[in-house]
Image 1 (cartoon, helix red, strand yellow):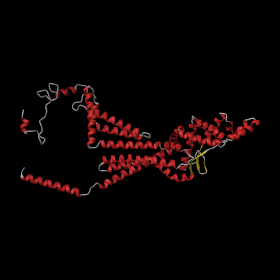
Image 2 (cartoon, rainbow, N blue to C red):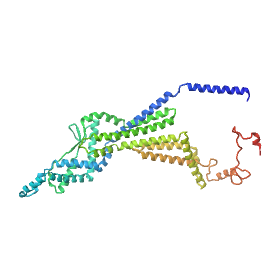
Image 3 (cartoon, rainbow, N blue to C red):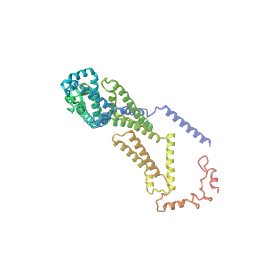
Image 4 (cartoon, helix red, strand yellow):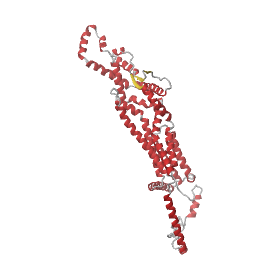
Length: 473
């Protein structure tokens, strides 16, 4: 190398070093852009659990049919049945006069029986109470109770929603600023069973209305605004959370990393909401009075938030799936190894299929030419299916992810194969192969029937040995 060339090289190196130093001294151009992107992603993650709560409020609390479908299984819950049976037993016993049992006895024997009953004292009352409780349990375990439970909850929910929204009178009367659930139909059926069993005194029990307080008017005024707000936001707050996170990802300079962070942030926010539900359950049960059955109240609470917990699990699974997909499509070493193993497995499968005579016809070349479009169409179809699915669960997300993965594997399988001369069954493939094979049926045409290799490369990428090597026979 001449001295002039050496000086020019030194000048070039100095210029590059100066540019590098100047680049380090300049502040990052995307600092404000990155801050805004991070802020949008954080806002989306914060709104995610609020969106889940709003959607649950609009879907369960504000929808009578959904609410009834949610609480209908409670009619078969043992804790709820026990609580209702105890409440009905107490109401019936309050209206049974043990002295009326003497009316069926001969007048001359009543003094002796009254004296005997007086000696029994509370034992007789306990025996009658146990008898009434058994009949109440029979009623709450019957199919008729399921109908009573469903109809009562439908009427009460309509009243509560109308009280919260101020949209008119409810189906259940609101007395003394209180919304109540009437157990009179259950008591009537218990009375009939008692009479059928021989306790005719139960027929004298008047119509009993045992009211169960659900909501006071003072509380209605306090929660009406919040309920109405959550009901209005139920449709668009989850969408707003997703749009904010998507805007942050698109605005970020490192979109793949931002997408992973946003997906995991949504999953973490959902887990925080799940923990909050568990803590609130304990606080709620501990705040109940002693007259309320905690096992029954716990069953009701679990039934009410079941759909919300399903949504939480779905969000966690969806976040993990999206983050995993973004990571696998990235340039990381581990992700690259996974993709290589994936493609190697499909290529080996396709090679085996080719050896046994499998032909794709015109499908293979078509898929190969439009592989990019086909991939995006499959992804869009999976996303559209998820969006249109009514209340998707975590298993639905897993199923859609596995289905998409299988469809992509089939696409890759069809796109693999012969690149030079696709076989279409008309002999063109055989003619193309004949031009490429030597006399021994192998590619090339070397004198030994093997494959002819190219010249060895030198250190600078050219043939080793220079022109003499290329001319060597």
